[in-house]
Amino acid sequence: MDRISPLAKARMEAQGFVDVDSGTLAQINYWLRLSPAICMLWVAVGTADKSPLTLWVLVPFAALGALLTGHPFDVVYNHGLRYVVHGPRLPTYPLPRRFACFLATLLITGAAWGFQSGHPVLGHILGWSVVAAAFVNVSTGFCVPSFIYGIVFGQPSSCEARQL
Image 1: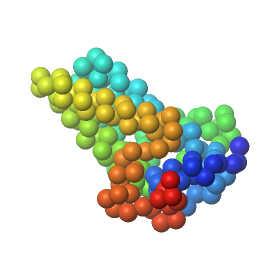
Image 2: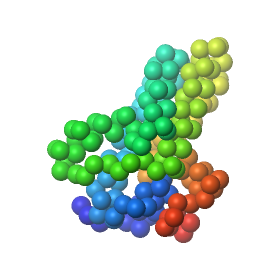
Image 3: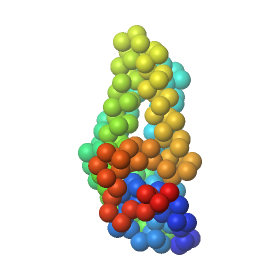
Image 4: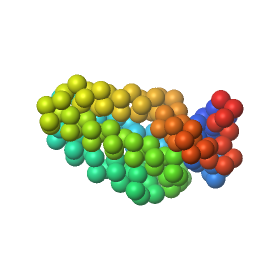
């Protein structure tokens, strides 16, 4: 699979993947959604269980996704699945994608604190917000926090997302 639709390409470029050729984008399109999918499921379990511990354990992983040039959960693909599917390594995370991890870190932290401090409504609002945003990314490739990044800081160069 080395063809990618213009819409999928624009959504990936909005996340900052502008220096990646179309063939590679086509191969990694769905694999870039693996880390958000893992986070989405983890936050869903923690929020449904009202478990601050479950959410606190995820916070460092989300924070590392913001601080590093890749997400720790990308190891599952880069050092395992890519050999099975004969795919390329995932590229380093550009700032819009890392900003998404940063926002997720803040919301997960807030949800964990909400449940821990006796504010379950706050925990549910923040937790389910992360789940909803991650679901949009996992199911469509559209990253809400990267879109916000583009509004606040400007679209990455060569990004066609403005045409959507």
